Length: 146
Image (tube, rainbow, N blue to C red):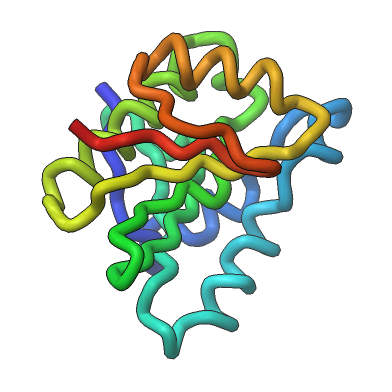
């Protein structure tokens, strides 16, 4: 079962050692870069880094950006370690993030940012997963929260 936990001293080192396959590195920033971005935006209080766990093992990373004024929950970055790919963890992580946005109850839309090169694959995946697609934008999908 997938769980999301905020990045902390316990999982930080594990997260920075996770990586994607060499062929995929052009599509996702390193977790170290993502954590540095979090630090840069820390004073805004709207960017949250999550370790993705299966049981007690860190298998991935998600970066969430929230905008309370626009009632928007953005999945800014998502990665699953190359050794853990192909097990359905990416799908489960997206579902967990969507559920988290729903439980918080403050967001009317969920945005999922993606790299343009893989946009069709991601569009198809998220659309078939959620079936609530409202509007594709240039570099994100906007999903209506039910």
